[in-house]
Image (cartoon, rainbow, N blue to C red):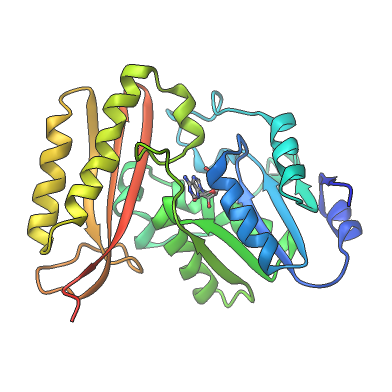
Length: 278
Ligand code: AMP
């Protein structure tokens, strides 16, 4: 089937074929991580919609909205290769009226960990994701565990607002050396990239430990070894559903998450681990 490019609600309605619909929301500059999400969508639904929209609402005033990579033609190529049915590519002025008032609040959970460093970010994410859900009306939506707090908040939004949509989380795709794929990796010089490897190295070293204190200490030591070129925002060991820090007696799945800048490029990564397995 020919790939359809939809710009608004009318195009989306016209493109509907019946059967189940899976949505993969992205900001474009598609890489193998996105493609892994698309493949999961493809095997689970009759029709796959990929949205490509660099959402101004989720960028802070000093963040990289204007320099965020925009590679629409090669994104279309990737979508064709993955047998995507519809690419939804709205214009920012069609998504947000100048006089818009109402949005989604991510609540307290949107103000901790990553949210503490990016005020308003998760409100912007949830607002655009809810709009995409309303426009596309998917049965299933697919997100990466790479953005673990985002995934947790989307699950929270679906539960708290009774959205009739199944959420699927997909494991992080990495380079052979461990670096998590990200649209922002293209900004890294060779030297930056070597520094950036400390993120995944720290997470692996932490995940090999047994107690929360050892996990935190070991991962922190690896980050410290990277030196001043790595500017760490946080290292957090949290409950995957609430993103609150886990204590010493915690049992079950936890997420070890890190955010750091290398030069002007900010990177995030995380691993899931199991504490005190019985
Ligand atoms: P983005 O375009 O960065 O907003 O990401 C769109 C979706 O792709 C989100 O659900 C991300 O979590 C997911 N994603 C980004 N990088 C990766 C990766 N390396 N592996 C798996 N999923 C990813």
